[in-house]
Amino acid sequence: MFLICEKIVFLIQNYDNMKKRLLVMGLAMVSYASHAQYKSFQEEASFWVRSNSYGSNGTELNGIAPLQKNSKTQLSAPIQEGNSSYYMVFRSLDRESKDLLDFNFACYKHTMTTQNINYFDEVKKQEKIRNGAIVKQGFSYAYQSDKQFLQLIEEEEDQTYIYEFIYVNKEFSAQDHQKIQTYLSVKYGISLIDAANYYDEVVGYLWSDISDFNHDITGIGRNDYYQLNTTSTTNSVQNQYTLSASHLDNHEYVFVGSDKGAWKVVSLGMTNVIEKKFKFKATHTTDLDFTFTINTNLLEGAKNNVSYVMYKNDDFTQPIAIGVERNGQVDFRLQASQLDENAAYTIGYATKSTGEFVFQKGDINVYPNPAKIGENITIDFNFQNKTEVEVYVYQVDGKLIQRKKLGAIDRSQFTTQLQQSGTYVFAVVSNGTTQVHKVVIE
Image (cartoon, rainbow, N blue to C red; front, side, top):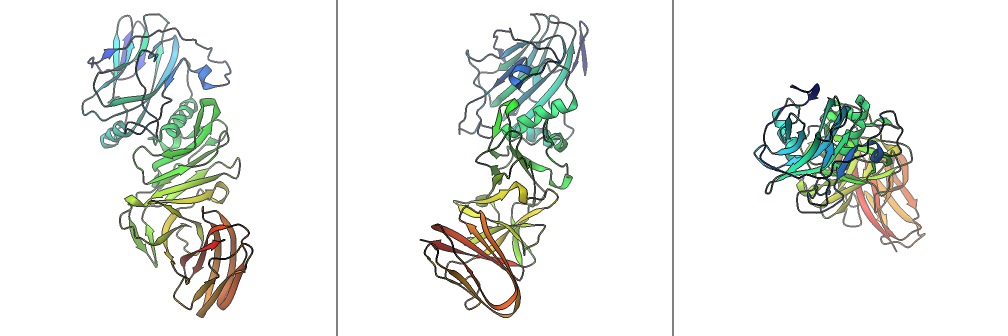
């Protein structure tokens, strides 16, 4: 709805809820010409307030605590002449509509509320309000006055939280909006409603908008212009899977999205798999190592004493990575260069051997175990019929260090040496199944 007041046109809806007390702070901020070049977004933004606190009391988004509104926090900014845009990250567990932001003018006051999300799907809208919403709005103002200002507001007792607020006095292009939304999405683990809006000024578009895999899009990334360096992330609406990396270079990103499959184990041919499939997209500025982690504590039908293997396009003869288990979490160590953004990735079970033999006794024998550094480790194969076999050797952290295709064999041997102590995983792929065995090097 258009609101006209002294030639001011606002592209925002009118909500007149005035229940909360106002926090009045200083209004003087430095503005910049719209065509100036900035070294950082700190210089470009007319007003920028955000939380730098972390916690674990349940109010966090991606580990980041909400703003603490107190006497030391500046929560007001002047509305400046010309085109402007603002962005807010919030979540609300309150059932009633709550006030978030006041527009104060000489002749009019407008209040933005938690319901001020422009989305046609009411169910999706309420999900965003509960789990984390990124709101952006634009308006134009004819002149500047010290009587015109934006002000964050709060109530004594509520469950509505604000995490970040940005006000920029300039005319924004579509890509300007996309860059800021991407920064906020990656920082707070909030999936954007429009999957085509993930954008970086150097890399370009960061996610291929594939409708089948646009669910719970989650990303890590670094962009020094916005002071963004998110190396670990959990999506705001689910904790079934996460992404992490030990280090990211500037303009490096990794994204994952899933299909509509349920978070449960189902049978697919000879292999038990998680019904939900995934797509990845990563920048290739370096050979980026990252970890994709699944939470098997939440996995319906999960079994004990199994290993998890990642496959590409349901090809169970080609394992992409072996999962490393830790207290109900399974880590897959991946590299950006090995991923195909057009492929779908499935996670399935491999038979996990606890003894000397990987398959049934007499088929395959792995020895010695434990072995010494530099000692020959041998796998004896003794199949009744010719069988296509491929052997993968992984470090215990999931890094692939050796791969050998043996072809069609019945009786044969595979021998290798390992030069560092530790635990290794040998994966043997045969007859479309993967089975694993751990070998200790002393």
